[in-house]
Length: 211
Image 1 (spheres, rainbow, N blue to C red):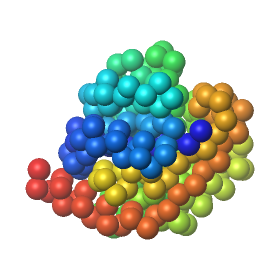
Image 2 (image 1 turned 180 degrees about the vertical axis):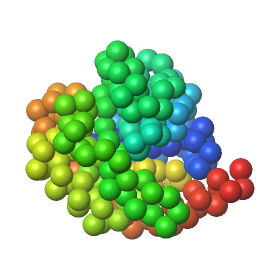
Image 3 (image 1 turned 60 degrees about the horizontal axis):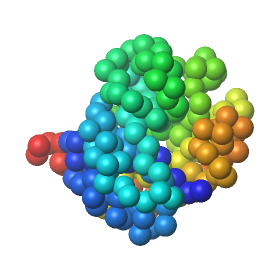
Image 4 (image 1 turned 30 degrees about the horizontal axis):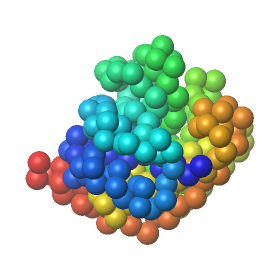
């Protein structure tokens, strides 16, 4: 299976992607599943899931939460998580049976500091994986995440962090069977390119200023 586990619809104000566009392009680019992870919102994910009529294609209801310690991705939600305290958000996610992933933990940008502010070893028992390849993150920062996951024996994921059509599928997580089982057994592979990351990031920054 090949899943893109980090995607944004227009419900994230830094993205212009419509639900039908994401679904169409994800399938065209031969993905087997996607996770829609808008910032503090699941409306876009619910719309994409409703539009999906392919029984062999999975749409995961997700959310990207900007907690007090950094960004966290949660998958398989039933309802939106409003908490922004990291530990409260984790507790809410666990009550829903959701998967918890630390997003781009070492990312550095010129505009914002997106580094996760807690040592991964302190939270490893509270999470299911670390995003070790993000298509909008510098190679060195992705490598730090990959090395940390190896050192701490944490499962790995990858995602495009797509906000625009050209980013969809530029990073993906590869596994056999179900995502839950693959993360539990730490049997995933990550692949991707950062070729479009800087351009996409610049467009998102401009879009946030405009809108």
